[in-house]
Image (cartoon, rainbow, N blue to C red; front, side, top):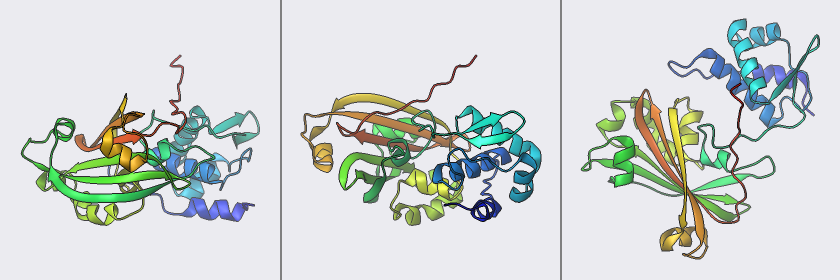
Length: 263
C-alpha cells in the first residue's frame, strides 16, 4: 500500500528540466509518472494545488496548467468542492504521443523488455538520409533491438541518429552519451528521454507489408507473414535527429490512438 509519505518523497525529488522545457511539462511528467506507477492509487485524491506547488518547489501556475492537461488526458477527474482525484481506470496512450516503442506497444497488463542486438556506424540508407536530412555520403549510427513479451519476440526496432558533426553540432551531450545509452536494455529514445533530452515534432507513419527473410528470422515468423511497420521521425532543437523503424509481428494485438474532440 502506498503511504502519504511515499507520495511526498516522490514529489520532492528534483524535477528533470531540460533546456527550453516549460516547467508545466516537467510537472505533468512527474505527476503522470506517479499515477501510472501507482504512487497515486486509482481513485485517490491528489494533494491540493497549493500543496503540490510547495512540495514540487514551483509556482502554482505550472502546477495548475499540468493538472488541467492531466485531466484532459483522462488521468484525473475533478469533483467540484472536493478536489482532484486519480481516475478509476488509467487510459492507455498510444501512437498519438512521441514515446518509446516499448511503451507505445505495451498495455497495463503487459510488460515489454528490450534486447539490444547491434549498435554500429554505417552508411546512410535512403530512409535515413531523407528523414534526417543527411548527405547520401554521410554515416549514421544504427541501434537494432528486439522487443519481447514474456520472452517472445513481438517487434524489432531500428533506431538511427546522425554521426560526427551532424550530431555533435546539434547536441554535444547526446553525442558524448550515445555509446553509454546504446548499452542500456531499452530503446535509444527511452534512454535519451530519461536523461532529459527533449524531442519534438514527431511524425509516425504506419504501413503493412510482408516480413521478409531478415525480419522473419528475428521475429521467428514466416517470411511471408504480414507485419506492421511504424516509422518514427523526431526533431531535437528544431533539427531532425532521430529516425526509427519498428516492425510489429502478427498476433501482437491492437495499437491505440487516443482521440480528442477539438470542440
